[in-house]
Image (tube, rainbow over all chains, first blue to last red; front, side, top):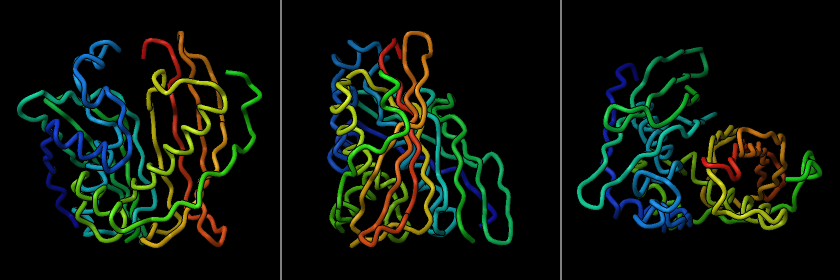
Length: 126
Length: 128
């Protein structure tokens, strides 16, 4: 549990559809170029909660599935997912703090070198 | 939005069963390979609670952007749980032409025990 190797996740449009189905969030900004453009977005974007879900997946990977006591983030920049190909989201750890009972991970989420989550953080039980 | 929405509980949403098939689909979609239920899975229930709130106050989902989301879990959510979400609006403030709505949702199980709390900031309207 000491090496927090950054986790890389590829997101395609099909992955956004799968998350929409799984979460029930069918907002068309996550599927339609026209709707995304109409509301001023640079393109179809991933659900913020999908990116946060990837962060939770990375935390589970690093901590071998430790119980999550807290997880949270701000959604600062959208992850734009192209019609063909994929966006690559990288989840890493900026810093970690350990007590006897908990591990706090200050996370970092980037796409194309740009930070997409604001102050993402998780606390797990050791 | 009217200040009268503040500091009162909206109607509870639930009980919502945590079903294994839905957990599996959500875990696959978020690449979660840990044991049990992903810690962000109850966002599905929270979305239902948010939609109920928006419809009650006459706001339109198209004008809402998710600004922030936090969960605190007192115990892990488990398959077979029947969860209920009770939302209240903790804060309301203007930012530019938009409105920041701070929500606080208590998530309880079938026994009424507090399982966790969720905090969200919703950005309503404006050019966000």
